[in-house]
Amino acid sequence: MSVIAPDQRLYSHLKSHKPISYSVIKHGLIGLTKYLASYLARYNIRVNAISPGGISNSQDKLFQSKINKLIPLGRMAFKNEYKEVIQFLCSDASSYLTGHNLIIDGGRSII
Image 1 (cartoon, helix red, strand yellow):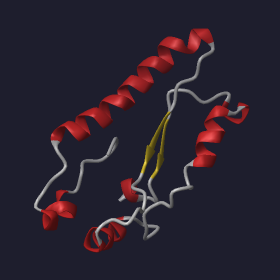
Image 2 (spheres, helix red, strand yellow):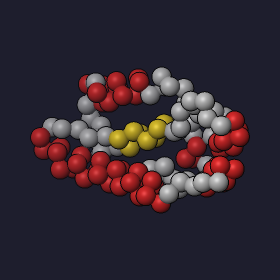
Image 3 (tube, rainbow, N blue to C red):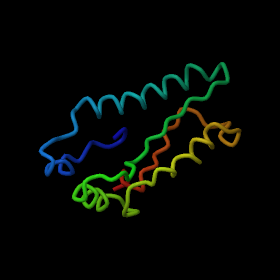
Image 4 (cartoon, rainbow, N blue to C red):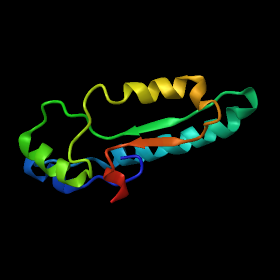
């Protein structure tokens, strides 16, 4: 939700919604990432963010069905699918990457 607004239809059957504060905080973290990256670069400190998609974890079946239709890969992430990305960002392989928001959401934010 750091780059898209929540689709409130996903929560309608639960008689709830994602509060506005959720999106405001997520969007703010991306701004904070960029600010810190530009400020700390002079100290050779890199700052990046990860915007993960939802993780499948025994959610309500109707919710899973609705959200899977919004994701081009057709499913939510498995619990272990973010580990390698974090390892990449912590390694020298990403030594020239700073101020970036890596979106890992199965393509949900591209549509």
